[in-house]
Length: 211
Length: 211
DNA sequence: ATTTAATCGTGAATTTTTTAACAATTAAAT
DNA sequence: ATTTAATTGTTAAAAAATTCACGATTAAAT
Image (cartoon, rainbow over all chains, first blue to last red; front, side, top):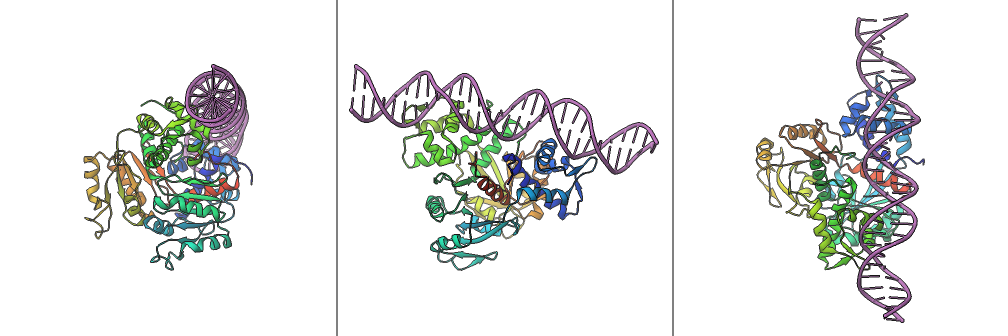
């Protein structure tokens, strides 16, 4: 795995999403300017990013959508990532139903909930288990990432459980911080932070660099 | 509004969240190292960030949690931001029930849905209206940010609606890109992108700079 | 065949962000 | 009262990311 600029990689995933739309609607070519409009970035940024991976465009016509997708995937998409979810409330259900996971890249393996009424059901084909099944399943299925979507009182406890299962990465949706040992990667998605920082950007009247 | 480093501001919101937890549990002081553990950042980064706003710590003891909160809020929290939501499905409901909005900073004003069965109900005290009420309400209540949580086929249409209502910022949860005129701020929250980029960071074995 | 206009690709300059190093301060220990 | 150890705050250095400027390329127009 070569070393590319971190932000370039993140944006590459955004480009892939945009390319999927374009390919779906049958567009054969796209210019950096059009991609810029779709992603709220600048055309220069996009050309620069793409150039990191190789030459993929034709002057005067733009990028072949399929070819560009292929190029980005070659460098940026790795093995399929295996994910489990904790907490099948509103948010958890929404995540299980999320229509944006391409099965060949992201595999939602299982969900867990402490509520016996939810256990043994399934949403979108993903089975819901009781918490005590977590360790076995996570290890057997080589799960890399755990998602925390439980009420905030329980989130640290789930984080501890995840760590004890040997998981490497956590996406935390609960509006509170969790503490984990060094070496575990955590991504907090906090709606309040998103709103407030977007609002700040708006007031600072500066175009956001990346969303 | 003074100009602070953009990333410092974003992280300031994270610190505020952490401070809320600490204050709630009665902690009077916190060191940069402890904050670092809570936020998955480094202690140096945190001290540097805080120093941008002023001096708030005492050597050997750390930061007074309340005082630090006050300091950060003074510079970083602006007027209350008014938000409306489109799409009261699983995800939309989860957002309406989100327990992390402090009313004095983020005010969820209304929700909209095209399904007549949902209209005229309320979730968490927030009323649900039909789409044709949007323009009036948004303008009357001075709403700055709209959240898109509708199925992806409808997301561009809602984006257009939001723009026509004069909204300035959009948070888009649907797994597709939307295009808006220049000057409108868009933040895309795409779970697939989050998972894939977290997974990339994990494999690159580099501590993430900010979550 | 020539010109024109659109678009990519890139090296250099700039800006922003992070990291490092360390002096200053303070509470606690002796 | 002195020493020690923890912790902040800051200046400077380094690294990363973005923007700029412009040459190169190519399709379309004339």
